[in-house]
Amino acid sequence: MTKLINGKEISASYRAELKEKIASLPVRPGLAVVLVGNDPASQVYVRNKSRACEEVGIYSEKYTLPEETTREQLLSLIAQLNESPAIHGILVQLPLPRHLDPEEVILAIDPRKDVDAFHPVNVGKIMIGNFDFLPCTPAGVMEMLRRSGIDPAGKECVVIGRSNIVGKPMAMLLLHANATVTVCHSKTRDLAAVCRRADILVSAVGKPRFVTADMVKEGAVVIDVGTNRDENGKLIGDVDFDAVSQKTSYISPVPGGVGPMTITMLLRNTVTAAEKIAAEQAKQG
Ligand code: GUN
Image (tube, rainbow, N blue to C red; front, top):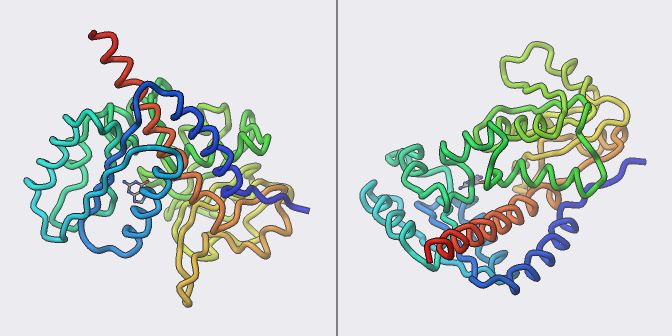
């Protein structure tokens, strides 16, 4: 019988711990979430992030800007948030409208407030293993494994997908945890055979039912990072859950798997940022 890795439950206990920690901090952590445009999925994510902040006692500011926001207007808001003493974390929801360059926008965020860990300074720190923040989704996956008693050390881990947000940092975190890591993508030859080697398989593809039972080794751990909508608008992952779960030792569902953990790790990063900034200020007297 496979065990379910319940991200909702793990999140709830992690958030309870964070709430306690926040109550004991000398400074109230603050997060600014910036949304540009009308992407409906992004609107839901941003709302969930604000709610989660409230739940644990993080101060939050939400900026909903119109689709036609100019580069100058967005950069000016980021500059203002970089300077704001109440704000320790800044998150600009991606994707941005086409006329705005995400790289330029990410570069404008003070790396100390970059709670997504998208700024090249933070990406570089993750690469060398000396980091302040971890990108939220891969960090959430690592925490799900840890709290389920699954140690990646020495294991064959296969990550499907090579995005900057999930696939690449996921591979790096598994490597830091001493796994043997393979990253697969659209040009991988015989993807199913590579996936069948995996003791731990992480799918971040964005295609419903992409991972089928023939791609999974008996007894493997499968983590589904996909957030897709089916023909009825229902949220589903990348994994053909009913068939794949017949073979796994552990599997994370969608919904109720990685999704809640991603937001929980954002809260954790905001707390870390607040602690670091407060410690720096104390040092400066
Ligand atoms: N869009 C999809 N995932 C993310 C995320 O983790 N952070 C931001 N800023 N935008 C996203």
